[in-house]
Amino acid sequence: VPNGLAAISKVPGAGWLQILAYGLFCEGTGGFGYNSDGQMSDPGNCGWKPPLLATSDPVLRKKRLNAELANGRLAMMAIIGMFFQDGLTGSAYGDWALFTASPLRAFEKELGVQVPFGFFDPLGMSKDGDIGAFKRRRATE
Image (cartoon, rainbow, N blue to C red; front, side, top):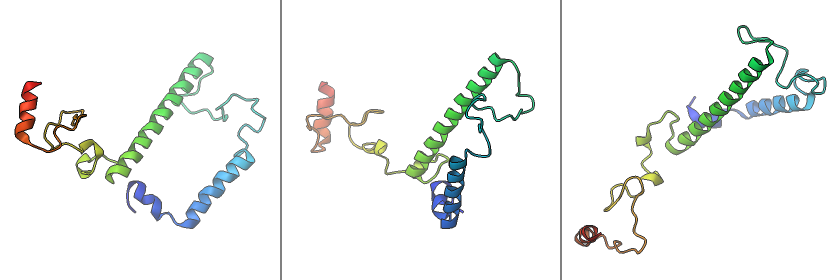
């Protein structure tokens, strides 16, 4: 099984149907009785008390729930970043050298490139690529 986004194409059609059917079941029935009381219980309280994390102190509970939300959001941003990198380079684990067609490297080896901004020539005076003229203009700047 390939890694990253390439693995999506290897899931059989019946697998996608199972995923879709389960999602529709959870949406249509309200899950497995979670909040079947019409949201009269606390949001996010499924009634399960994880060991060493459960507390009856409302201030501490709110702090822990906020930390869980923040970490969940960070994890979502991280996975989206990995999807983006996998789409660009073919690897979610960061070998940037594999992606040589990056628009960030468009002018990397050209005359007059200034890191990190790239080549700036709004008047097009260096289109001809004359190195002598470029060096003369650079010296007079």
